[in-house]
Each structure stands twice: as C-alpha cells, then as structure tokens.
Image (tube, rainbow, N blue to C red; front, side, top):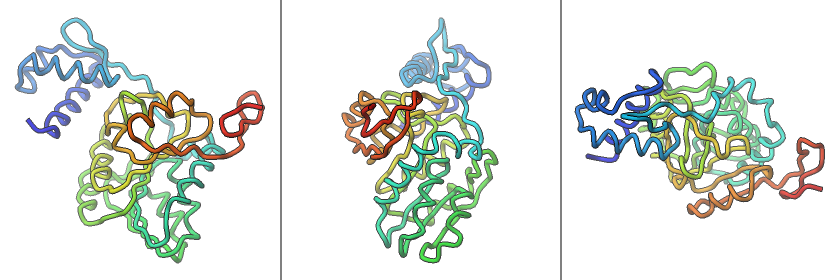
Amino acid sequence: MSGRMKEERLQRILKVILKDGHAKAGDLAWNFGVSEITIRRDLNELAERGFVRRAHGGAIISISAAVEPPIIHRMTQEKECKEAIARTAASMIRDGESIFMGSGSTVAYVARYLPNHKNLTVVTNALNVSTDLATAVNITVVVLGGMMRREELSLIGHIAEQSLHEVTFDKVIIGIPAVDLKAGLTNDFLPEVMTDRMILNQAREVILVADHTKCGKVASAFVAPLNRVNIFITDIQTSPEFLEGVRTQGVRVNVANETLMDKTNRVRINGSTV
C-alpha cells in the first residue's frame, strides 16, 4: 500500500475518533476493510504522533493544542513577535521570485513587508493577503479559487487543490497552528489538511513562520513531518531546546533578532533576559 493511501486511512480513522471521542480496533477494521493488526499499527502511529491515546481494545482522542480563534483576533496576539518574524521572512524573498503565501496571522504580517519588492509573483489562498497586496504595483497577485473558510479568510478544498496544479513557485511561506518535534506540523481543521499538503508538495523551498506559542503543540490532524520544512523562522522566546531539536532534523533555524518585552517587563535581547 502506498504511503498516500495509508495517510488517507489514518486521517479517516482520526476523523472517526474525533467525532465519537473513542473507537474500537475491531470496529475500525470492519469499517475500513483491513485487519485488526493493521488498525492497531495505525492507532500506535497516531498515538506516537500525539493525536490519540491507546485504550483497551482501541483508542481515545488526545488533543493538546486548543482550537485557534479567528484570524482577525490572532492579528493582535503576540504582535511584536509576529512582526519580527515577518520582517525576517520578507528579507529572504528576492526580487523577481514567485512565492506562495498561505493563510494565518503571521503570514499576513509577512505580506505587509513585501510591497517594496520588485517583480514578485504572489500566489495565495488567503483573501486578506491578496487584499493587503492589491495596491502593490510591482507585485502580481494570483488568488486560488475554493471554498472559503470564514474564520481564517482562506480558500480550501477541491477547487483550491485543482488550481495548485496550474501554478509554480520558488518558495512557500506558511504558518501552522502547532509544530512539535515528534508530531511535526499539525492543524486543528481537518478539511484544510489536504490543501496544506498539496501546497507543500508543490514547494521547492518551504519557509515556516511560527511564534513561540505554536511550538511544542500538537493539533488534531497531521499535515507533514517537521523535516519537510527548509527554514523555520521564530522569535526569541522559543526555547533553545526546541530550536536545537528542530536543527537536528536538518531544518535551518532563523530566530528573529529583535528586542522584546517578556511577561515580567524585562527586556529580552537575543534570547537573554536583562
């Protein structure tokens, strides 16, 4: 069986467990037309990724990342961190490149630092990104079709995935609700997962932008392993241990070099508190 078929079965199993809160291995084997041994292996893999917990004869749901609020609210959360990350990401984009920009608040901040670039082509499934770049005369904006996810202002689903076959890009800039050293990139909205995967499959270079609040978290649906990312840009409040774990997976880490205030109002410079 191909890896894609297995991954699709894992997603379908997870969807069942998400809906009911639990599932028996025997019932899953019957529903999916495979052996109980295969289902038990699948459940073990989902447990290793942190999505479920094994229980007697089956598994129960285990979600450690809270569902994110709508993007309009997230734009005001960790604003300084996201702006620092965005400036760093924008500096990695060269004039004349074609890039894909996904949805999410941190990616939206990146878009705001691009208008001074020249001869860029920006492909996006994020309506807010296309609006922010609408008046940038040196940027060609290509918007995918698809079903709108209102909370995220993103276009997803079959039409968006079909549209991706018609475009190419040099770099992909994506955000993610949760990134974990073991579970990889995860999302809390199952219908968006396949769109996210197709975006990553089209990418030559993947730049992940995520602030410290996303690190070490696991959401309900697996998107991709961490080593699918080429460059990880985060802020100075992300723990050094987490960053080292990312590096050991062959991912280049770039910490936004900014002065920020921590929760005790002490200044943090390059990861040190003074």
